[in-house]
Image (tube, rainbow, N blue to C red; front, top):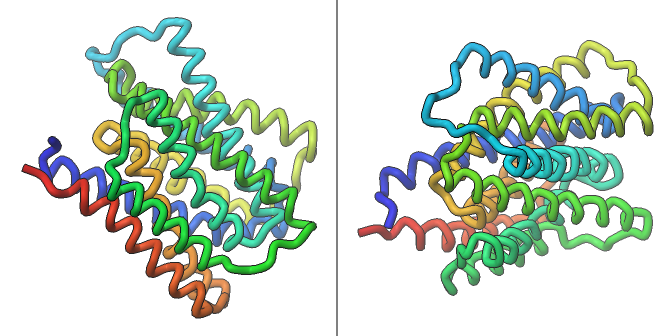
Length: 297
């Protein structure tokens, strides 16, 4: 059993990350008015990668870290392609085709992917009451975005679901690697972002060309790169040392609430009765999962 203190610290860190990522949705929607989605993602993660490389040079590698073999490098590359080029890159494309509310709702199915993959590959099984919590949170997500699906949105829906599955793969592989302690969090984050960035850059250049970005666009990109990417992903990967993959995945559902409040405050979007009820159920579902885990001896 984990001590309460060792559980609450990474839990708090993870909640901070979800807030940063929730703010990203508002900033990305604003930026997409001027910047193509793949180019937006590619530049964001390129700058984040550069920052992490500089930090890695300044901060020397701990002697306790082991030398990576060819299999480790292949694993990290797959993680980077899945977690950044796949999950994050496709989120930008999904937000281009879909409203933020619809995108957020679809990403709330990611915990199902994480639970299934985690049970198969990590042998980490949620308790029955936690499964109930996941179901309650998903019902809340559905009620929150209870709007008819347009035919024109089918492409975006498919893209976002693939993004969620790719993120589940990244979560499971990262959790598996972090349990071994073979590689430090900074190196893991840097290598995986670097691998994903290469794919994003090549895709953006081929499909969208070189974009023209104004001053406000660069301000958004720089903030997203430094704070919501380099710092946030490092902190998120660090929490996977202490928290199970499905625990973090269900915790991401709180972003539904945060995005709703941020959209109301900064984008003028209104909350309906269904949305309010959905928010309450998401909070209840997340609480069931997290409170059960916080009962320690």
